[in-house]
Amino acid sequence: MTATSQFDIVIIGAGPAGLSLARSLSGTALQIAIVEMQSETILANPPEDGRDIALTHTSEKLMHDLGMWAHVPQDQIGTIRDAKVVNGQSPFALHFDSTGSGADYLGRIVPNHLIRQSAYNVVKDQANVTLICDSEVTTVDTNSAEGRVGLKDGTVLRAPLVVAADSRFSGTRRKMGIPANSLDFGRVVIVCEMEHELSHENIATECFHFDQTLAILPMYGNKSSVVVTLPSANAEAVMNMEPQAFADDIAQRFGGSLGKMTLVTKRHPYPLVGVLAKQFVATRFALVGDSAVGMHPVTAHGFNLGLSGAKLLADQIIEAENKGTDIGATAGLKRYETAHRRVVLPLYHGTNALVKLYTDTSVPGRILRDAALRVGSFLPPVKKRILHQLTHIERHAR
Image (cartoon, rainbow, N blue to C red; front, top):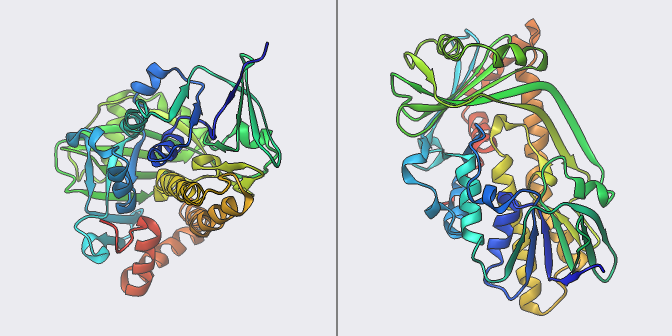
């Protein structure tokens, strides 16, 4: 016999976006089910995955508001005070300093597994949340009255609203028939953490070399997050380099400015594929996080957009509940979609254009990059616009 459970919201995916949405609804009477394929043991202690997340001021504030920030060890939080963009051996560098942003720093940087752990910690004891782990979703369908989520064990979850937060390759999105534009960059990003002799001085640097892109992001102490982006065909050779040979190569590419560098974590490869869902909502259904938009990491907006999108959806749900109206009504979901796409679209397309410019290995491409750095350096309005696009810092953010 099939067991059926009734909830107000079913969230598929217990990543930071899905969990932060649930946490944002903690003050409501809404009963929420979160379905996750991984075990609760893994949610409680996520493995280190090499990814370190650059957080905007807005995201830092949201994490404070949700109680997540208190669960991140303070000695694991890095600060990005300034940022530089360098084009190979060009003498021109685009420099973004925090004084131009109206804040003491441009952003924070936190290991991804600690963010995931903090999101779990603020939801695990939430009275109105039921975590259903080790569970696979086999069916999802909605109609004008309700949504139904079928699990592999035969359980059926019913709710007025179903939310997908299950990655840029969302199976739930496909089951609901929502198409997505996918852009395969033909590149792999290799991420890791490295210690170095000299101080990074809280400066993030993006170096565009002929054969690969290197980002050095300042973490706590004399440690940096290293992000290497290179053609997919070259990734295996770089992954197979001896650890110290790899570290020495990074130090050399960075001009030796950090002194001797040492690899202190595993190297993790991730294929670069950008995804943008053609719609973020359907009948009694919404997408949040990477399920809605999966960004190229060059502008570090993926997690930030996921967090802000979850907050936008939560605000619509809370407004409906306060008014005693249907939380899954199309009108409210459309308002969420409109507000989120207004932020997402220019960042998604702008980021892809930026990536195209900075991965063009032709001579004209390198000349154009150098020209772009000169324009950005000498025209303050252009530089200010780039600063806003790359960091997405809001003036009123704390």
